[in-house]
Length: 173
Image (tube, rainbow, N blue to C red):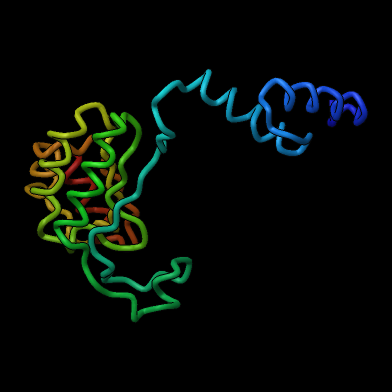
C-alpha cells in the first residue's frame, strides 16, 4: 500500500496488525508482521545463509591490482582449527545445504591443512556445495585429485600467467 501511495490505508492496516499482535504502534506492527510472516514461512528453523566464505589463511602469493590484499599487504595469519570446527559445527546445526567457499581474499592452496579440513567439513555437511577459487599457481594434478577426493565440488582458477593457464589446461585434459 505504501508503494502505491496509499499511506493512510497502510497505517490503518498496520494498526490493525499491531492490535492483533499487541505491538502498540504502526511502526512496530510492521516489524511484528514481518516476524509473524517469517515464523509462518520458516517455522522453527533459524535463518541460514546460502553462501558462506571461509578464509583459512590470510596469505596470498600475488598482489593483483583489483584485490584489497594488494592495498593491505600486512594482512596475514591463519584460522585456528577450533575456529574452523566451530564454523562447520554451526553450519551443520543449520543443516546447511548451500555453498561453502574455501577462500575470500587469499590463495587457499597455501594452507596445507585445507584438504583434511575439507574432508572433515564434508562429513558434517554432506549436502553443501564446496567451492574453491585459486590463482592456480600451486595447483597440480595431484592437488586437484586430492581436493576432489576430500569433497570439493568445484575448483575455479583465475590464472594470472600463461604458464599457469597452460598447466591448468593440461590438468583438466
